[in-house]
Image: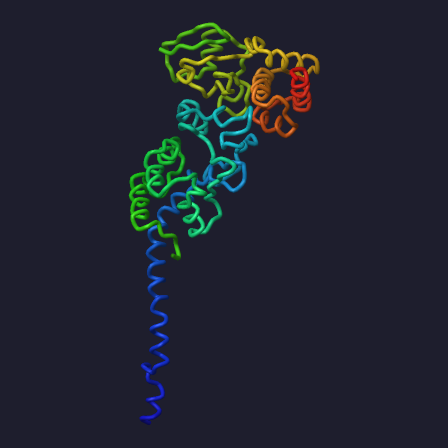
Length: 196
Length: 152
């Protein structure tokens, strides 16, 4: 009987080797879980309608929470400001239209536009990892450093509109202050992406 | 108070600056060439130019015009492109009922100012926000090509 039990000792050299070899994997998983937790709130904001409706893979911006293709065949144009003769600024002023014009009158903010055609910075349809990697990559985010990203979230007036969209438009899941604090924490941690 | 020019003439306004520019043009100045269509920037009938750029005057507050040059359908023929567009419209008899045509001409003029030789796709992209209940779209497109040829 004693020999039988000995055959099942967990501390056999092979078992010990397996444990030692997998420790880094556990450590990596723990780090991945931490980065998931750091980035998930940011992802939830970026992939909310107020943000992702303009961060599109195609060239037609979206409207409303359901992401309906923008009426009137509106297109991105080369610089993100619309097509010649049909610029975004035709309808979108530097501030929301007066409430007296109805709750569906065009919203507005300074430099109302999409990302330019050569730098789309897509938010829609990406995994958290893909979204994160694109966000922190200066070649894909318009040359922004991590500190520039913090500033972009905190100070850009068009970004700020997303938290004050007026009418009955749905807000992102975090407030502006919460979002900026979360981005700062993510940047302070070295901007890790989910899975890293 | 805001100050601006309309078709080259100086104006000032010290009333409610949130009032849509269209109301100012039609009700205060009796310039009724610019039309009220939907009131929500959906149809394009109210299109005018602010410093050469098209805007829907039904949702543009008067305050947005401060210090700018406003051009309306009554003054668009002061410029070469506007004259060419109107001439092409007459030559091809684009208009049916005519209600939307002020806005169509203003948008077509802005398009040709930005693109001297637009393709059909360029025209469609520029004009798709101007709705025509009589469906004169084919003639509108032809007239824009005609105006572009005359300007070449």
